[in-house]
Length: 320
Image (cartoon, rainbow, N blue to C red):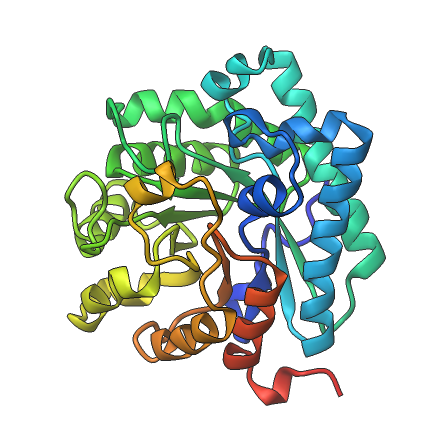
C-alpha cells in the first residue's frame, strides 16, 4: 500500500508537530480498561476498546488542528511484537493482522481529520522486546534486527509513513531496529528512555547511545527522541551539550518525577501538573533546537498535550 509521507516526512521540514500522550496510562488508570501487559493493541478486537482508542486519537488530533500544526499518529502497537504477543495468545499471523488493523485505523482518522495546516504522519509504533524500564538480557544487534523485522515489514506493507521505537533501553536493540527499518525502506525514529540520572538503564549516556547508533547504521535514523522520563531527569544531561543534541527531534516526557521503579510500584496515577510540564517543555526547547515532535508519555493525557502545545507551537502556526 502506498504511504503518503514516507519519502518526505513533513516533521523534518520545519514547524512543530504534536503527537499523543500516555495512551496506556490513560486507558488503564483514567478510563479503567483492563489491559494485560499494558498491551493497548489487544483492545482493537473489542468494540468498546476500539471506540475508546479511536476517540483518544481524535481528541489529540483536534488539539493540533486548533493550533494549526501537524500531528504524528503513533499506532497502539507498542507491545505487538512476538514475545509480548505470545503472552496474549497471538501468533505471527495474528500479530501481522493486528498491526495492519492498527495502521488502517490511523488512516481512517487521517482521512477524516487531516487538513493542509495539519498534516498527519502515520507512524508504526514498536517497543522493546523486554521491559521498557529494564533492559534485562540485552540482545545482539543481529538478533534485534531479526526480532523486530516482521513488525516493521508489516508496517511498511500496510502503508505507514515511518516507524518509531519507544522506550528503548540499550544501543544494540536500537541498532537492530534501525537496520531492520532500513531493509524495509522505512524512515525510523529511535526514542530512548533514561533514568533519573539522565542515563539509559544500561548506564550509557544519551550522547554515547546516539553516536553509537549513528556510527553502526551510517546515520540512517531519521531522528532520535527521549521518552518516559521527567524533564528534571535529563535536562542536566542536555545542558552539557554536544553535536549529538541536534539529532534529537522528538520529546515525550512523563508528567511524574517518580523513578521507573517507583512508577512500576505505583497503584495510583501520578499525572503531575500539566501547566508546569508545558513550561518545562518550553525550557527544553532552548536545549533541543532541532525539536520537531512533542507529546507526552506516562501519566500524561490531552490536558498535558494542550499545555505543551500552548508553550511550544509558535503563534504563527496557530489556526486563525
